[in-house]
Structure formats: structure tokens, C-alpha cells
Image 1 (cartoon, rainbow, N blue to C red):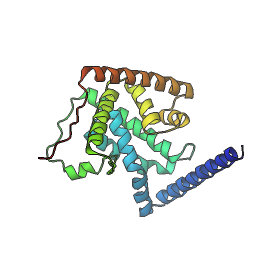
Image 2 (image 1 turned 180 degrees about the vertical axis):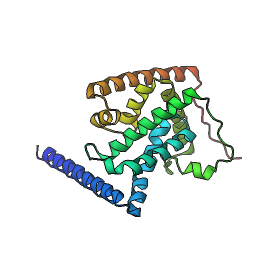
Image 3 (image 1 turned 45 degrees about the vertical axis):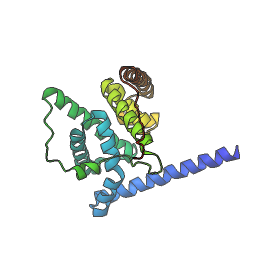
Length: 221
């Protein structure tokens, strides 16, 4: 029991510290402190891109969403009233911008990706860093699995996809997902349950439809 009390106290202290950091950052942003803008981007640019990419499955569209999100954050920081955390506020803007991008896509045909995109610049958006202690065959298997999950996510209902991404990939709590999406906790749990089921079905179909990944190490010549 003592351990549980200590852990609870530690969690509350961490939450209070995070809230204080958010309030400090918000105040600095309102005052136009340049380092505050850099800190905001450092903390949230990569997570926002990762979320937008998983909702849209298009790196170009996700990059556009990131720009729109931070423009809105900079313009509207004065209206942030800390009724939610800074993170959930920014993620809510991200989900809304992803909705806007999706609606635009269905009204217009997808634009061709420009061929002169700098690959080094695109590489900076990557959200994972490979573990160098693992074998290249394990890494290849993980990449294959990652592709299958991304492809399956793209096929399920967008309403369910965003709930699953926020909970299972972005690792928000159910309460935070409800805040981001602006729906009840019960609705969030229902969407996540149905989204997971749809994702499981898609992955099962993918496993049956394609041959298993064969990774045979090269023998020395």
C-alpha cells in the first residue's frame, strides 16, 4: 500500500511539473520570446507530424498539416485557457487539420509529389531510430510489419483510425483522446474497440494474402 501511495504521489508531482512547464511555455509564447518558439517546435513538431502522417498516410500532406498546425498555435496561443493540457490542445488542432486535408483530398485529385524533394530533409521527419544492437534481419522484419500496420490503418474507417492512433500509437489516455476528439469517454472507448477489431481483421487478411517475409543471410563468398 505504501508503495502505491508513493507512486501516486510521484505521478501527481510529475503531472504538476508538466502543467507548470506548459504554463511557463505558454506565457513565454505570448510574450514573443524566441526561445519559446524553438522549445515548442522541439517538443511537438515530431509528434504532430507522426500523428498527421498516420491519419493521412501521406508525407507531403502530413508536412502541410504540421505547418498549418503551428501557424494556428502561434496565432491562437493567446486564447489558450489551460482547460486542457497544451499537448491535447495541439493534438486537437492536428486532428482538425487532418480532417480538413482529407476533405480537400476528396474534393480534388491528389497532387503529384514533386520530384525535387530533398531526401535529407524528408529523413528528418522520421519518427523512429533503429536499434543498432539488433541484426539487420530483425530490422527488416520490423520494417515489413510496420508497413503492414500502416497499410491496414489506411483501410479502416477514419473515425476509428484516429481514435486507435491517438490511444495505441500516440499513447494518450482515454480521457485525453476524448478531449482531443471532443467526444464522450464512452464514444472514445467504442471507437477504439471497433477500430482495433477492424485493424485486426485487415492485418489478418494481409497475412493470408501475402507470403511470409523470408530473410536469408548472405553466406560469405
